[in-house]
Amino acid sequence: MSDEGMPQQLQIELPDDLAGGNYADFASVWHTPNVFVLDFIAVKQPPTPSEGPNGEPMLVVPGRVVSRIRIPPEQVFEVAKALANQLESWEQETGRKEPSKPLFGFGAPGPIIDPKEGENDDD
Image (cartoon, rainbow, N blue to C red):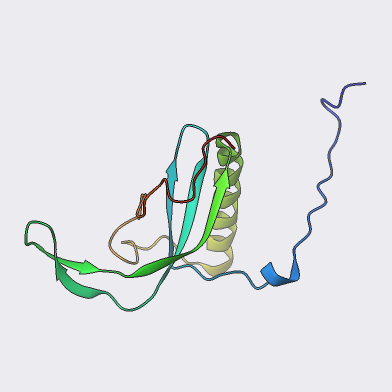
């Protein structure tokens, strides 16, 4: 007997130590051929003025990755749909809309840290 087409019921446990979650100010999303990575980042202190590599003025935003989530490419579509659905519900409930500019002036397309750090593409 094949399991294809058979209804599924997920039994998901939320460990007590993860129930509170982690706060993140923004996320960086990047990928390798085998995995998509979402790095959730919390800002450690206010931005400070600095200089870029060519002497141009810039703000440095010190942050720390508070959670790294690795998902298979096939699951990214479901995550994107779920986020879009939740965002639409949130907009209807709160009346709030997308901000005119990102919180820190950039969308953090990633990677903002070394993508090889702690990675193994064979998973």
